Image (tube, rainbow, N blue to C red; front, side, top):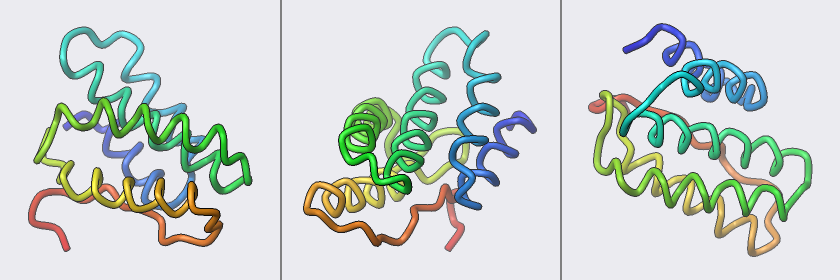
Length: 115
């Protein structure tokens, strides 16, 4: 896996969503083909969580929905990432945000077999 993607995942898991988005966007921009949409899904999730942490419910739900829709094409795993678990966790957060909950456990990007 590209070291910039590994770095982006570490930023995501450290709740540094804005910087994660910037790092992953550097990889996404020149990418072509199916991998481009996968990276874009991760970027949407990061941006959605960034908005959620700042109380922007509309921005959060819009970005999370985009990310979930795009990530759905890469289930159950892609590039060693447990996308099924990430998808399920992000769906739970989206439901919590839409239900008015402002406190939620952040999702983690986990590799297959990682607990």
